[in-house]
Image 1 (cartoon, one colour):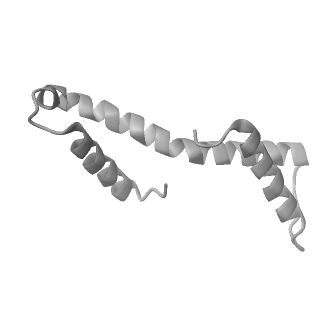
Image 2 (cartoon, one colour):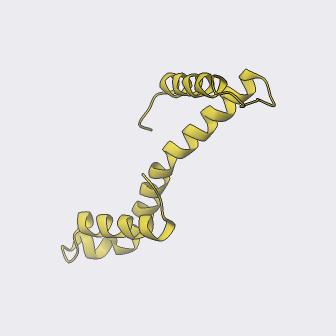
Length: 93
């Protein structure tokens, strides 16, 4: 993950404070539960890229023989497949 847990918690705190300062925003739960939910959402969003990369690596195992024989470039296949999945799933990384 690109951010450590303390940094994610700090971001959640900042976001919660910013929302609390906006007139008309009312929370339906206590700060601890909201902070936990925000932390979970941020962590999940940061994990999207890691899950995508793991999926691409797994998919490329099917081409392992061609790659090791030098017929295909792993880097080129990785980049093309990753970009294809990003476009198909409309991911924002």
